[in-house]
Length: 462
Image 1: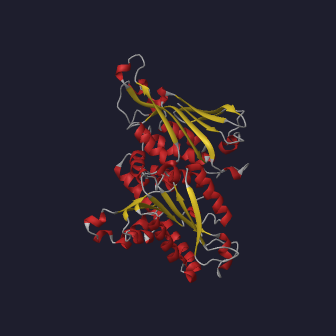
Image 2: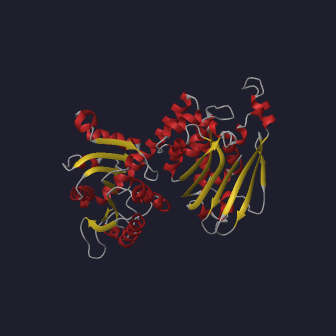
Image 3: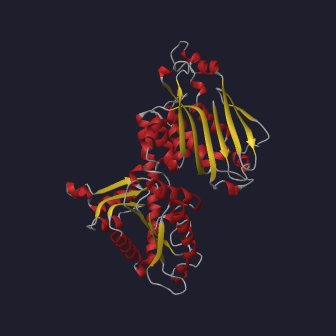
């Protein structure tokens, strides 16, 4: 049972610091059903690989599970212990507990640094085939290669087995990759080697709560990870509660931002400017990414040139408020077919966002961690690839003009950054060059000769 994690970001040997395992040594631990070992087949400044090898004791495993299984020879001859499964998941947690907790005392700055990483699983069972594998991992930012393994190479007519050789790559943090493997390996297999109790809900929330709740396949993950319907339903409810707590914080911070900008009526000016840009671009099918409570959607559905509107947001609470704002329950069937609301996150690929004429993102990107902006750009401009993108973000230079905001402060407590005009222009240029768009920049709100307008807007055309 093998899994290899490779970094190709120089100095690639930093992987040893993040995993707390020195490249010159082999680390071994007892995992109850056998032993797990970590070693480094290669460790150079340009490529470093840590391989986890789980050595299963099948006799000991079969005997330990006798009370949960009927008698017979099946547990002794079954090949499943040698394919990636919940046993590998347990081994990863035992070996890399500190790395999964986000601790790296020697190099703390590395923990949240996205690296070019590769994951290789020579043999992994996937119930549902490669489509399930892609549905689970591609939204998380991975490129997935899956090769089916023949049932028996001597008898090709027998077809393929339910096992795959898998290679995945992406730009992510090491901590996040370990969490994804820990949660999703048992999901791929759709079974576990140990008894599932209520504490499994806590494990799922602890290792995946912040990304499972916004994953397009949340229900499949919860159902397969927990196996029992009651546990899966409880997990979904608790994931929703996490989202509601975040909504409350977000509402409070939004109120603060609106109070700062209210004298300029900036929110209204932004919405009107974006709706005007959509109108000038010809309308058609429009997706609002990070739609929040639906203020822009409300304007878009009133535009005669807009034929269909999809609003996507990570917050269930915000989508519920958008539904009430738009009065979806009271619309005629014909009008209702033009408007859709869906939960999703902008750092996950989402096939529902593909094929639109225009995508809008109003005051969204500044809520994304800087190291995840490359992923967001890939999702929006590379995967969804709309004909045009209309995007707004604060102009940090204008913050000195707000009475109740310190020059060094941010307008919203959840903003990860606020860009100057030069910084925004540099990012827009890099995105355009990378994905084949051209762009134009403008300002929204009163123009100051020294610091520009309070809001920046970019229109990208493919």
